[in-house]
Amino acid sequence: MDKLYNVTDAFTMVHPITLIKGKNAKVWDDNDQCYIDFVGGIGVLNFGHCHPHIVTAIINQTQSLIHYAYNAAAHTPYQTFMPRLCELIPISGELSGMLTNSGAEATENAIKIARLKTQRVGVIAFDGGFHGRTLAAVNLNGKVAPYKRGLGPLAGSVYHIPFPSPDNEVSDQQAIDALTRLFEVETDINNIGAIIAEPIQGEGGFQLMSPSFAQYLRAFCDEHGILLIMDEIQSGYGRTGSPFAFSYLGIEPDMILLGKSIAGGLPLGAVVGKASVINGLAKGSLGGTYSGNPVACAAANATIDIMQEDDVWASAKHYAQVIETSIAQWQAEGVSPWLYGLTGIGAMRGIELRHTEYGSHPSVMTHVLTQARKQGLLLMPSGKHRHIIRLLPPLTIEHETLKAGLDILRDVLRTIPNQNPVDWS
Image (cartoon, rainbow, N blue to C red; front, side, top):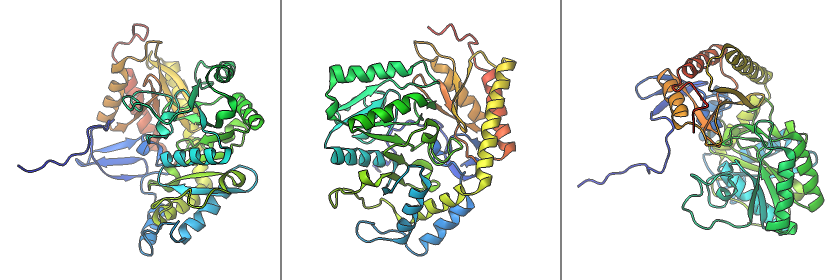
């Protein structure tokens, strides 16, 4: 009998289709069905599918050097990209960094750096946060199912507190009280080496951290010798309409984590921070075979070129304005009693559907995703109750395509069954 070779069934497939090509904000499946793409590979394609400048950079690089491990011998794409990346990041003083294969690996290395630099093992993270699926990173996630369920004991000394945001019901004081309690009940403050947070939570529903709390956190870390890490894996590289989301918070972190859109769709991540934090570690303590692959670095250099074009930021601003105007209009028209409003800021927005303390009605998001796909629009859910539609089209989306996608979404919201959100329990 012939063996069967299959992809593991541990994956959750949001959309049961097989894609074969993409161009900017559209993709096509193996039946040549076209979809407007509001998923973008889960935030990886801020500048669209197959951007011609990125494609050209990839092709050119593959004709000269496809791979070399940087810790074996240096190569120019890495050496060119790293200074440009450090120059792009608005943290004062000298910066240093390393490239990784992914955002999760960036998280892992940042925690290693924090431990080595502070000689403390404890990390504080936030409810609703997401920092990766690898074994150390997964314990930072502020959610058990599906990431931690059944894994048994995880890397210890990780503590979670509520995430204060204008997009949820958690206040600054609640988060501060939880932080205070942590050091009264759970651990000595001198055990904590780092605090890690997303300036805008991705998986958590595009919720912006309270700027005043972020400023409190920066002062708290300074007072106690704790490193502040901002996870910009999803929120960075222009997703908000600004190069990095921590700029909205009025702070400078010690390290930031990057991934997703950093290389236009190729696997790449980065840890960048103050040189006093990143440098001075034992030789060989950081590195990786594929980390900073030449082709990925070439794509990343091309991505920075795109970010220096004024048209991209004008397009992002237009996109943000259209989203805000459209949702306000839908609410005024009473498109659906399920429509609550927007989360996030700028061009990183989520559409929140109503929920109760019991959670969201399980059929609502399924209905929205399924019906939108049938009409040619791909969407992605998020949020604690899977009740927030996270919008991740490219910042370069054409106006007509954006309007067509929003028209589909509006029409789908009108068709949600059980048009009475109070009858959920």
